[in-house]
Image 1 (cartoon, rainbow, N blue to C red):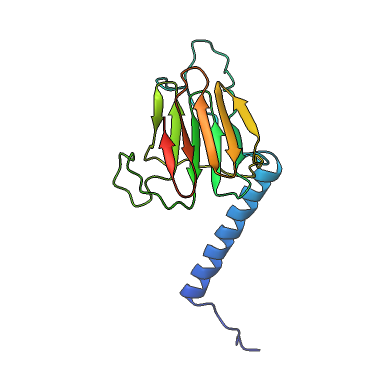
Image 2: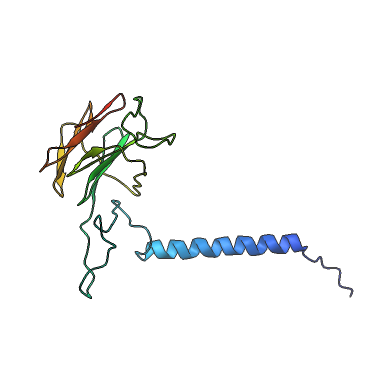
Length: 176
């Protein structure tokens, strides 16, 4: 019997290797998520070092950062995070001119922040992953010294101690 079997071309072998690597990567990522590793499930949380630190502590034991509190407007157009350092909201669709944005980026104006020192429109994006619970119109939430209220007219967040804050809605925003 003669060997009449077909041999794979180098391009076919390369394709098989690439697909195998992608499948292996997918299985590893899936296993990590199923065992609790990787991205958090449920409400999204982010542990960040307080401003002005590198995250290191004086003791040898690690300290747990307070979790951020997340919420979204009932429409889902506004998503906010209350952290120990600030209250931040991102609005996906807006019609106002972002006069207070300090950056030249095309999507500037969609991120508002209040800290103890005042309210601003920062350039860096706020990334929120996972499911975020809705804060119904007329409801408020308070965490880490910040209070936010959801209303049909938009979301208002303020620093409880200083009174600084912002209001954001599709048609307008105000820093105070």
